[in-house]
Image (cartoon, rainbow, N blue to C red; front, side):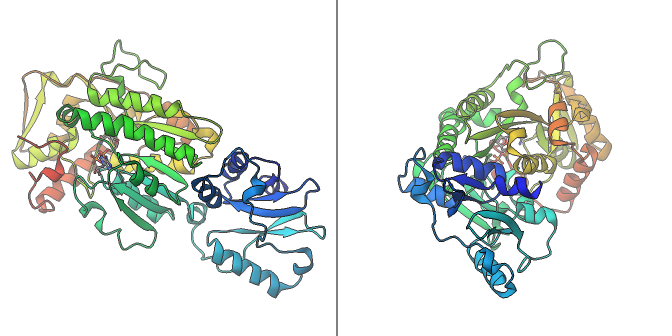
Length: 460
Ligand SMILES: NC(=O)c1ccc[n+]([C@@H]2O[C@H](COP(=O)([O-])OP(=O)(O)OC[C@H]3O[C@@H](n4cnc5c(N)ncnc54)[C@H](O)[C@@H]3O)[C@@H](O)[C@H]2O)c1
């Protein structure tokens, strides 16, 4: 961004509402806005976290920002700019207060914002990507799950601060090694509890919601929990974020919302939905509930993911590729029910995590209010072809095609929108992932492969 434009993007008027100033902060990507009077003289600074604290104290976001402005900002004044020691001291002070700051404001001799000076001390020579993400605090609800435990690690290693809210249905193990990390925080609790939820969104800039009762069988077994978690609590979470001016909200939906494909057109985000299970219906309701809350300061994004596969610290052996691989290695059998002609888009769980990170990094205007199918065109598979891919890696297993298929889902999905908008392309290959799972089983990485923690429904 040109320097002048950059300066303009962080300046607000004292007459602006708190809500408007939050928009300015969201769109500039800076953590603060500098507030000026009608003569363009600086009267103070306000940060996103100060705005959120003010909301919790009961301030009205439609009131003037003047009421909450910090009138003693750390800036460099015109007379100080040539005094290297003073300017450096100010930079140090600012870094102590806001460690992720990359610029400090320089005022002219009439105390008007003049320039943003890059902070040249105390910055570690980390990668540019790291510093861009630096300090962004992301709450991952359901962050201890199959996808969440991979996404948490990925965001941490890319410089984000990660907070996880999870009821730990499948144990603490998947996130255990992150607990000692300075930038990681766990809130153990149930998102259906409003107080827990409000505590979890404290000091957070962005929210990803992965928590759910996941999969058709689990939802069928627990219909009340499904409606409470997947729809009602999810909607409450989105409302709480909107109330607290947490603008970026990413929701994990599923291509299962397309249900049974009619005709043979590829399904795009505009195609009609045809959910065939409580799970898929709860996801459709959640999508609608979240999108209906969109406004200038609340920018949800819906990610309709393909069926995931691959190794994760919270392993799931109830997903089609993982199940077939496990059965092939352990029982030497690969079952396909009903001919295996149904189409199912697949995606490696690490590629899925990459898609979430891209959305968190993308300028808001490109993802605000958008729904994306997440996967890749080449990984639309028919069930029989998945079984054949497993057989290639486990040649001594027998492929058994028998019985009737109870799972009615059949969908061939287009992923061109996410490819064009986010330049997202899945890079992991099905065969390599099958091989990795096979190797993990053979190396006895799962002491008891039938342990319920590896399944979202107990196996019979
Ligand atoms: N795995 C897939 O193939 C797939 C495909 C499409 C969409 N999705 C969606 O992605 C998300 C993550 O799926 P996953 O495979 O990682 O599932 P998962 O079951 O491994 O993870 C869900 C996590 O949410 C937590 N959770 C559940 N209810 C909670 C509650 N009330 N409060 C707090 N935490 C709670 C669980 O403890 C668990 O850690 C889900 O929303 C799912 O619908 C998954």
